[in-house]
Image 1 (tube, helix red, strand yellow):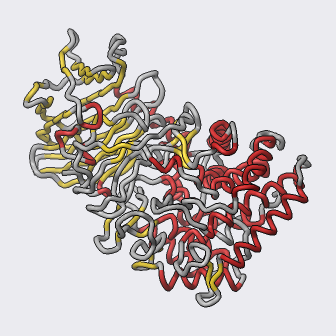
Image 2: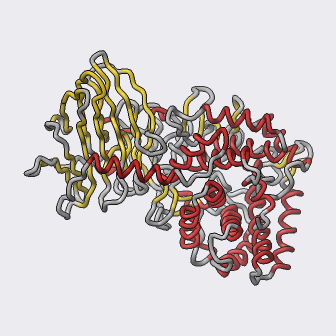
Image 3: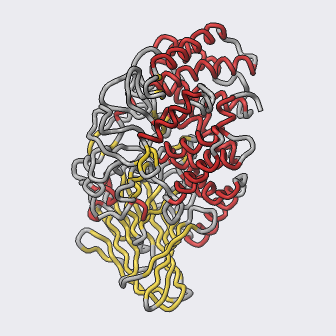
Length: 599
């Protein structure tokens, strides 16, 4: 059985990522890319679906941490006989993806064991394992090959590779696991200690670029390191999470594949990276964004693959029982074919923010944006599936309409601030029409609040973003009423639910945790209203939900007091960074976005 979600740490090399449990077991690894088939899939199955554990043979006290500001995970095991450190990391570059595991004796001696269960194809394919002349273990199945190099004596047992060894104080026992193609010669060995030094240097130097952020600087730094780890460096894309089908409710069916890139994250990503001092990553993300949306505006998707792939066909891995019985395990994401009007606003806002910050020439991508608006002009009145990708049919979502307004508003501001050609008067007329439509049809006077869909009575946490995008001032009575209503109806144990799944017909069984990004949005709304005590109190509460190494998932279940949803979640960590900056910076990202003037 897999560990609790909060018991995992993340290692990665900006191309792939793995989850390592407190028990020393790597239960999830997709190779060689974030979206490749998993070769360790115990996270959503059982140990026979693939994992690699290194742990003491006797009961041990376990503590862990990241080494400084890096993605090198250190798990310390202490037994009655001694203590040892398990150091896990993935070297960057080198042409081949590897996992390096070092068992370092600290005191006394500890009897250790290792069990490698390698299963390609999401736990379905047992490889053929042979030993090369130099002692390297080679596992092959079809196009896939993996090699394990270690001085520890390993044997095959019941379709597993196992071994036992003892580590003494002062000793280091290395394991190097490398991915390659089966039709190629085995890649050269990796010097484990040299790789450790190079990996630590990379992450330490990268972290030095970060601009400090007051009392929450450590949380911000760990979130930024997590975001960096989720960037696919060849293209600049950022995956929403490195996992699939970790449930939004334990035992439920709200299980989705998040190993793709959502346009809804565009502006938050740019603001977080730029405000923290990471212009190179922000520029790469902007260039990825321009590439993937290039083409006919009516073919724009809400999400893409990490290299810009459009076909993200969804299917179910029927042989996997799911995390704690949360079935099905989905591969791919059918939401890629949905219509979501909010993505037009996200793209236009992100590119406007990039111009303001000088990331690119003012005219870069402008013709594409003008074409976007020509298409949006004709479709903004249509229903869509909304930011939450409901599967119960298209509706007139209030937030989607507000984001359509945002698209035209940002086009007007870009044209005026950067002397770009476009039908500004027509855009201004359309923006005013959309704004009036939202205020008339998306606001319920009886509730004193904006509502999830036109003419409805239900609330939606996405409406917390209305002041952040500049749709209305934070102290407008309609915005204050919306925040008050969300506080009354969508808070669970002080945290924000996306919407009431018991009442909303979203095409799925009800039940999910509190959505952590939405809770950070409430922090931002408090800041914009000047409610500093409420903002800091909620922000500090959210920081307490991080696991022992500073990671957060998509949601939190107040009932079981556990993290739920895909992990670690980029959207959550992006929201954490932006909220921290809003709380500590004179120039707050939320205020800059809302005003969207040159700075």
